[in-house]
Length: 372
Image 1 (cartoon, helix red, strand yellow):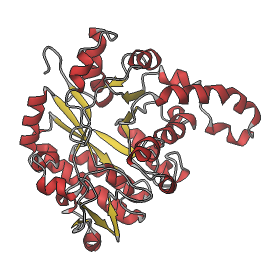
Image 2 (cartoon, one colour):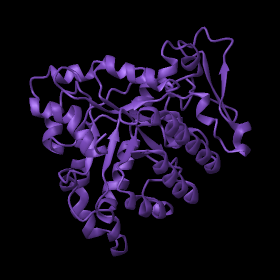
Image 3 (cartoon, helix red, strand yellow):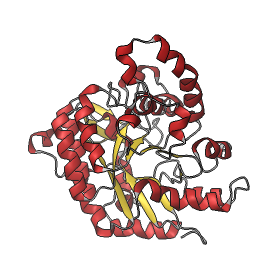
Image 4 (cartoon, helix red, strand yellow):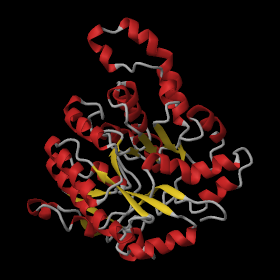
């Protein structure tokens, strides 16, 4: 607890580490990511190493498609390497105690969004990650919760991965804003969504540079944070809300993680501005691709959740738009801009009520994920 407040961290991370592919299918073992250290890295700031994946180095920090993410050095040299990579779950729980966090929900490195263009290899990597998380979180499953990765681009593997992650103890499913160059509403994923709907698990859409065509436009970390890692939120919102999936799956609950919440004002205004006109002018055969209600109505339905920034000056307006039961607290721990004091920042605000603070810090994550 933090003072008198219970805290449920709705978005924290486990950084990439070789232990995550110990269960990789045998035929993919030679293709596993390998740690590589650069001998000439004096002008590369903190990025002195990278993961060698199919001839590429990720994260790369110079040239098109660059992005910030954890490097092998963080795992080998980092002061908290065992806890950040969840090699020491008990140590991670002790860190939660130090930060006043009762429960923490864990997500994978954003590098998983662009590990490979090969759907089969991607499926193998995702399922190996899920097995790793199932083992590590089982040690304290009340306080360490996790979301399983879904290999959407391999239909049979996606169904098998869903059942396996449930058996392993996953409390949610995580996807990125796109499945590489496919929208989340792509017809090839319908069989998976039908099966997923039966589980009643929440769906988490996590920030990542998941859409490869953005790569050529991105030259700096700011480009990455503002474009390639941020815009897939809007693509996912169109796919899941704007193309009728909330109508098709009435129990579907969606959380948008690490994108912030400010973007939702633009999307709601833009989509509602055109929705009725589009109903009138587009071919009738496409009518089932439009939502039956206004976008604002879906936000008020209690099924769309967002991890906002605790210092966001628009939080009061976000609460007014979403409702006070849909905003989630997150630390993003232990990423580079981890906000260990984010909960304290919320508690110090004067424009948010005490009831709203407790909802954001704990009650709302419980509504989304379920009781710990």
